[in-house]
Length: 256
Image 1 (cartoon, rainbow, N blue to C red):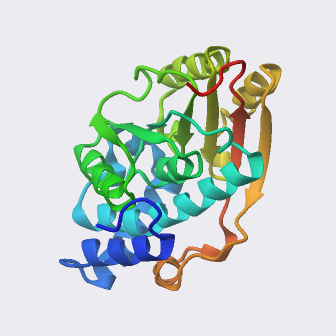
Image 2 (cartoon, one colour):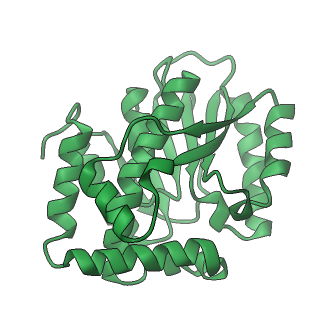
């Protein structure tokens, strides 16, 4: 595998080879359509892990949402200056394929620690780490109860809080708001669509009261053509990608 410093475009090409080996384009397209339907119309099934059931949906998640989330999180991290000073570790809660957390870890010259309830996601994240040459690990576990890293580190929850039920979501908010006092940078990234996150206003009030900020972003950098083609074939609009974020800078801890 190429290792640290390898480019985004080459990673996307490697993803294509990895996930299209046994699936046709039509099968992946149907998987992406099913995923999109889950996210918009059948959200009650997300908490039970329905997004990663079946080879088609898993491949679609890796091939479309992985590259999209990498670009979105990298753009947010750069705009916020969240990659400097360098971090010891980025903890990626609900890591999926590891794409979002890898984007921040690469920007912050950090090791990576990912946790997800899906065994498939853990294995996929390990492949992502190996491909980019990132130090770190991925393990199966409960993202809400995961041990926070030692400072100076970052904690990322990207496109995952919206899949939690109310009680664990509230517990996670309390833990994240406590992070900056222990020298942690905290970044939450979610889709722009407010209907997917009716809880967002409460989280935004909590973050801003704690000295953080809330932003909305539109992705200027286009997706690779193969990724955009898959999105268009599934009825999505790759040109309309965006995200909203909450960010709390860590305080008072220098890199050891």
